[in-house]
Picture 1 (spheres, rainbow, N blue to C red):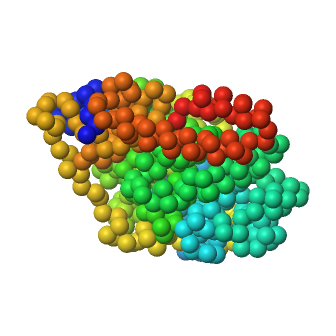
Picture 2 (tube, rainbow, N blue to C red):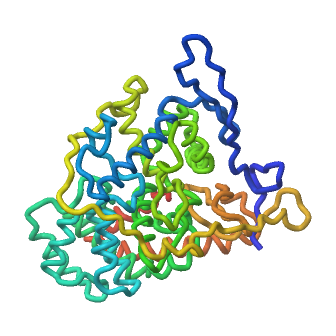
Length: 459
């Protein structure tokens, strides 16, 4: 049994403070203030925050953006909105799965070709690496059906070397693992080969129950940062073999972090996930408060209740931050322009396919956790289930009987007796991955440099 002394303990006896978000009453407007929406104050993780205009704008923004999508899906002609910023500039959909590339992955990468786990996983991983439809279609044209079973490093390199246009999309690029090969695609292909042949990642991820665990597992790989690991996980979650809840936790990108900073101020740093959880839990009252009628609350599918998951909120926050640059230019951020181009609808039919396994109500029920009291009659000792992730000399711990919301970062030296077995298992997995990458380094010098980078890698 692995035990640990908790660092923070709540009055309820849970291993750590989870979320404390309380709506405080607003100051009643007087005189000329009557037409001005007064800010309200909320508390998140024991810190008070005054809400900015960007917070209030988020709810009508997502409602109007999804209304635009529904009008386009229905085949209605322009204009689709009277909101000038949304009419002038392009914004991604409220629901990530409805975006163009996600629809392409679902319709052309996942559903076409072999439905075997390894083959489908390989295709999703390959597409995400380049994130460009033209590159995918070039590979298909020259190599035929793309499957792990028929993968040949030499053939793929030869086809990619013959390309006369850019192979990678400008957005959402997974950094090259830099194994010493001249071209990024050569290094990327070898990382894919390591994931499939050495780590057997498709099967390993199938053993995990939570999105956060899957994210931590993929973060073990060199060059996989928080945000890009999350994008890969969300692509994989559209496969019929997996169905991790997207409403327990989310990794934030730079855009969503910037939007939360605009909403709550700089003090929200380190509390971003709790802030998203607060928005998730209180969204329906805020939609009403901000003038969004229930019929306009975004809804992914009729089999699902209206509203946004934590993953949806993170995705929408990034777009709301762009919107805020035009709507509230006095609220400064890192960037000031709304977009690089004027919105122009792409040719082709708008689609709204949803992964079939997402539509199963039984698969989308909220998991109930036992949340047991401290063990052995103590006040502050809990049993460790497993390691979720690592950061320098700390481990992210999942407590037995608790969910991802209760995970705690614990220094290695604070872990109790028996936790050494879990650490050994975690390190063995890292060693297997790193050995696979080292075997694929271009030269002995590159192998030496890779060892140095791996030693500095903090998950």
